[in-house]
Image (cartoon, rainbow, N blue to C red; front, side, top):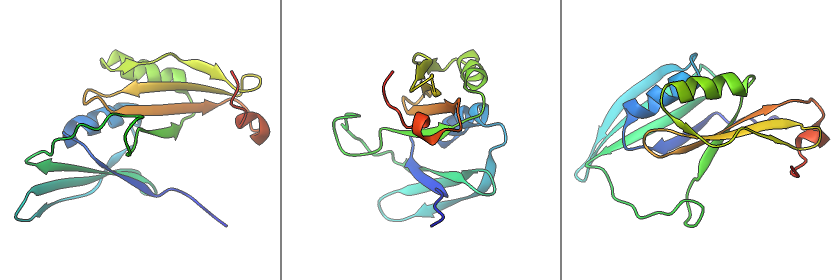
Length: 144
């Protein structure tokens, strides 16, 4: 069975700020489509931002909704993980643009991967992973 993730739909507080972060991480990303949906309660601006094959559906509500969700404690998305080819370079680009990153960690057997969590200026956490092996068994070892 062929399985691939086509898109993730994310509600953000600022579509343009989210796109700035993602464009630095992924220079090849572009707006694939955009629009506005209106109803009695709110207006929703949306943009599909990514490549021709995969994208993030970014949505922003006006007026913005309030939430008291606590990441890693309450239901909801905590972060989205991306596999990248050169994590140190991606991390350097984002940090040079003023974004905050956690440690660049070596993990797995060998190590088998590099991992870093980076926060955009909206407070959203994004995970980036670079695999250093083609060996699936080593890729899936979760001990440091």
